[in-house]
Length: 387
Image (cartoon, rainbow, N blue to C red; front, top):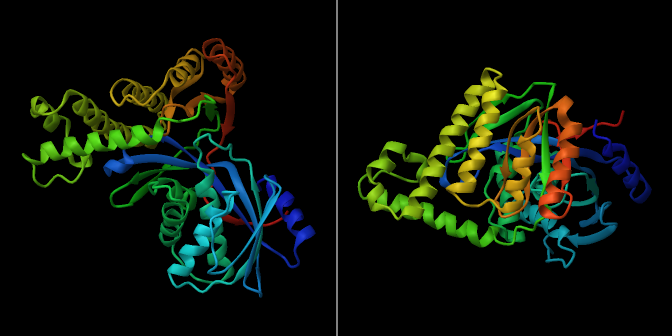
């Protein structure tokens, strides 16, 4: 049981009457498959033991009363009377309520206390954990009988439409569909997926935060997306059935290289190769070959750094420091880039040395110590019981 469950339950009892539904909603990591989602490609995320915990109960007056334990703040709204808040965190919750109302789902007021231990700004998607956790709670409390995919789409639309962030579907998808000791190979076009075993007890997933804000990420994301689309448009003159880079092969790219802007070619080649790497990583996991898996993570970072050019000196410094530690199988940047975090696959016995050496080497290179988080692959959003 997540250690925050009794803490959140106790805070609820001190503030509200009744017995709440307890929900654990995880953050996520993406092991490999970066900048492939908006190209209708493949990703490989997993849910983590870092999570947001909810205590939620229905109320009869139509009021929604939210208490954020982490911010020590409260917010109230009425069903159908949603409004943007200067506090910002209530918008993720209101966005979910708004989507349920727009979809014609009959919900009432709620009392809700929530709090978590997902590192903010570390690229582990605390926002999707808030959205997915509340969507799951509303479905359970009001007996709506929604499918997992229904909940995923409602949570994603909450962020797209109310919060105003045009995120893809991966974060909400793994939040709802995650499974303990498994990661997903997710097809971002069809939303079909396979569970792959991630069961080595002697391995840890380690997140290292550069503490650099990703100020260029949004604008450069749009540039990269446009470059990928330009590549597809040029290739479509020869292959009219192409929808996205998902449909492009390396041979096809090479055959028409002279017709593509050199930068566009490099962007496209990275995406095509990354989709291939996700497939190879799935094969490696199926045979429990984490040495090959780690090597593919290293190749992914090289592509992100050299061809897609979304890394940064700080991300590169963290990756290089990690790879100098014996027992590190692979390391790469994770997320949009230009700051944020790296993800490393580390033998459990090497974690203390990793934390010490990476912190020392990064501080020498960047002038500040990184934040390091060791996570496990756990289940997706689920109800919890007090022991």
